[in-house]
Length: 381
Image (cartoon, rainbow, N blue to C red; front, top):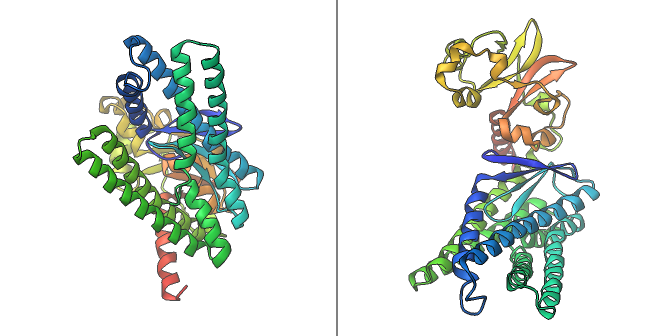
């Protein structure tokens, strides 16, 4: 799970979250359907404004449910193939399944990647069947319109995701083919990611052309899609390099040992003065009489009204101790980094039989990855 996202629940044991950017695209799709597409000539002109908005709300909701099913298909196939999936985050376009390691073979990569588009095409067929039945039975126009749009958009979603640019599904299919040929995952990922960036820039250029030509809304859509693809291609390549550099590494090799702790019965105002302002740390473990109680982060302190700092105990403001906020020294760092709570809080407490032995942060992991990259380049790897 990524920062700036909201948890919405679990499906098949997989945590689902929505990134804040998703709400922007939800509103934009809703507005576009209600005010432009459905009322336009060639679709369903002449209906009431209320009907258009009801159609748009239902369509937008089912559209994003379709996106979630698309991502779940990836995740369920990955889990069936033995690849752990901890969470799904829905973004401005599509979503990302948070896997803790790369697939073990090109065939596994292909199966996981193609599962998403396949599910979208199946959904498209189902909605086309509903549209056909609704049209033949003369159901209300709103129902016919919603079914037709959902059929069309799912087919488009499946096709769009097959664009050969990593980390989109088509890019992963391309990576699987390149990987099978070269037997080099890093090289295959780099080529697939570069293809994705080139395609993204081409889509942006086309969007700008449409914008200049007077097709403002269409041009804006293409620019956003191209920008998203270009950014995700670069991000996907970095993620692959990160997973490879963390392969086989344990938490105890990277964690900061003997972290400074804050007493649980201290006031938040005192904790700010004595710890946050004195030490350059974004969070501190909370202990009382040698017992670990949780963790206090700077984000939690900043979210509180300053007037409450003097009256609030640290233990009342902290993230409570739980299995989700802790890990063990011998845990795989690759799997720990992929955990939703690590992404959300930026750190986890390291406990060895209930004894606090360290803390692992995203900063520690980033420093290790950079060091690994420098050493690898120095030895020509």
